[in-house]
Image (cartoon, rainbow, N blue to C red; front, side, top):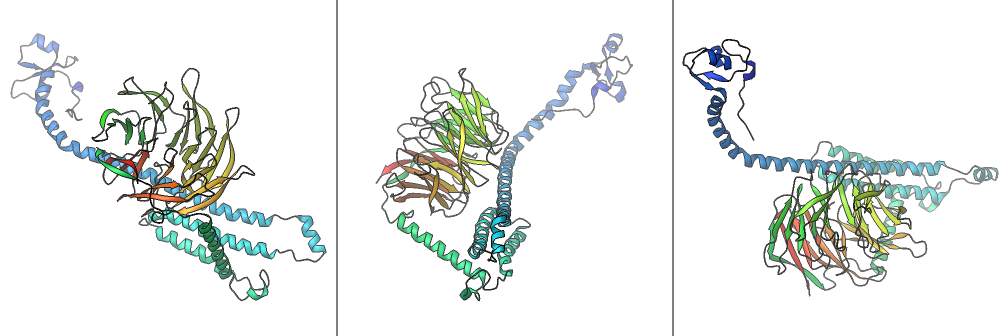
Length: 575
């Protein structure tokens, strides 16, 4: 780490006889002045001085210095390692804070745009219609429309303030937080200043009642009607009203110490290998089939990614690429790792660098495993495929999101893709016969993670981790419509960008991380129209920094959490 270095530049010095030759030795006779110490080859030839080679003198001088440096390094190395971890945590926190600030910016911009859009709608009129009203001396103001405008405005304010509060919560100790809260209070109360006197916009019997009170009552009735409709049409997520049919029980002997941050995990096709992120590196572990001992570390894939690994996926079907591993990172790169025949050593075969910011999500198609989709903080979705020469190329880029891409999900047939982003939109993307992907629908939703359940249904998880929204396809127009939103158990807010919503077909389980909980949700029927949605199990963690995955057959649930700093395995058990 440290090497001895003289403060003087010895090459600047000349021999005591000024021969203009490089010095090579030192006169070791006591009592000499400093400018008489150095000698060159010419000096040695014409004198018989007691000299010692300069190289040897330097070695003798530096030997005790090196010993001190070694002792110092032994003392400081643990401290430097901890400081490096601290620096990495700060870098991660910086990226998260920047994300949250961007989210705040998007929310406020959307709020402003929505208000301006409503004003543009009001400003636009049909000249000939208004001319007819003028000629016939009819009232040109639509009472119901004006009332609805104020109702919509209060609803918009309420929705956006909830979004802002969820994003501002981490900043409550920052300078300026109280000013944000005061501004939001002023926004809410600003509508009270408008005293729309009775008879102008409302029926005569309502003119003494403040407009805001009327609208709030109307809003309350509407919400109540929606809640009643939800109760009748579906059973709300529950744990106690319907007995659980399964549990995931922890396997105490099957754990692995993982002190570094682990934001991504992946299990291979036959549950014999697991890949776990270790900050910038990846550990490949062998899982004992008896599940009665600690996993064996096969290899540490290091020094390739330059920042934290955020996504991991094994190829699981095609024999030529079976057990190859795909990793994505905050360094904006995607790496495809290929194993040897014994699956004990992996090498970085391809490094894909078309993104220019963090990789947030990545999906491998179940139907076409020579096909990968990635979503990034650079606002793009990229499609990757193997060309005839067996090289991975970027075949298409979609740039419709206006902020970070958060989540992706591909249906079983591989012809539909869902994406959700920080711009509060879900994109429904279809593959055409020409193998090109086109956007078919946009849905306003603030989800952070998304997953197909069937080809006709999907779920989206809210950013604050408190709700799941289900969508179902409309058989008439072929578009997805919002079917219902369910509040779910969290024990604290906060969702994880890198613990995606996941539906396991084998066990009919929806895996959802919400706040401090990992929730396991089942569906009594495969159709949302008549199914009962049941919270089978909620696994609580002390802290909300949790990451995990599930095996394809649903038998293993694997997690890492910052409190235990361990990889923990849980096994599916029917009750």
